[in-house]
Image (cartoon, rainbow, N blue to C red; front, top):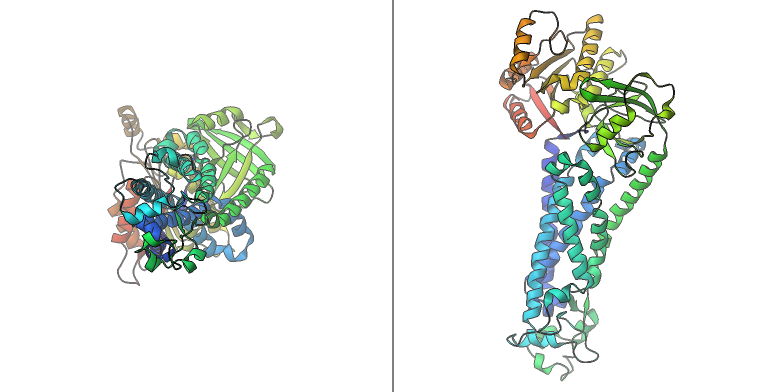
Length: 568
């Protein structure tokens, strides 16, 4: 069961606006500089405004490549977050939330790369046309520079009969540009939601092409295809005068032959810092990989769900976090994310794994099922654990009332959350005490997650024993059942416990009426701040977000719903 993470709705808007603003600023400043810079005046004679388009998009590409590496270094940031006091509490939660714009920046890279490629295609055609017999005077004169000894060239296409595509593919810039384009296409296509759901392994392996992408990016500028006039030549060659008297070059003192050179590559300067962070992240991951993980218990739940309980030295967690697991016996390279289903107060950490692919099927088969404590953990395959990551779900502890909504597999992160909420409710020294928690679980087949129903049953029993049944109000909605199930449910409706889940709270059939639910919650908690936390599909997320806006009071003293969603 893949992990989820909470993403606050207001923060991405700020992040998106800052990101767009920075991209536009860099593009416009760079575009204007290349349109006005004197050293590129002769280059603009041949290339026109496509020079500025190519260079401005290149800078935006470098900027976004720098940004996209930062979320990759989650382990390093998680290490800093755990050891630095300034990165704990609210600051730490905001840090976790703000690292999730990886996909947005990827789109920025794709757009910048597309503009850069199209601009260079125009540049290549203009270079080729300026070598033709129909080329006007100054572009033709500039293109012929470099044919005589002691001259430097401006036009990389040396003859009119040259095939520009073949010529381009014999240069460093051309080869690396082609590799960059192919790598980016592979990265983008393999990262689609469809590919990740059908074959996570394909996504995992293909995504490591980013190493080739960044190596090619660092080498791309070394080709120095686009050239400008050197500073020394500008001191001797009066461009303003000489551009209109190109026939007198080398004949008059103020118009010596201009000299050209390529600009130094700068992409490596943008990505050097994030690459260092990424290297640190890999070192930390290797260190964590070497740490021993003791498997204390393996439990087989109904519907093919395997629970692994583990211990690891100095492992600390918070509700809603997830870990990466690797099993060297299955694959030496693959790491898969799983939401932690244990609570921080428990003396172990656990995950629930359902066979949903080749890797998870192999893991479940390798571990089998043992419903007791393991006397010989060494008999099981070795596991490596990296993490935990993400902690934004802890925001639920800061509201007097919280609404937790899960759809299908989205119920996983709420396992640890409900356990922690109950623990804090029972802890007399805890200052974070939500007075009420509403939990909604919508699923097509409750039997697929019977392990979670068992958790609810345990919490229900404990709350009844301690006289705190009012603390948690939960409702389970079953959206899919057949005629035989419906008949069985009707015959046993009057029993004390639910036929499907075994809980005292009866299962509802169909989908919840969110208008009625939010109206009732708002009525029960006037003048309160209510946190709404959701993990599930996008369509339902949009509906819940609309409900939060609709039932939040315009009066600052009234009830306000604060929405947070989780993404698979």
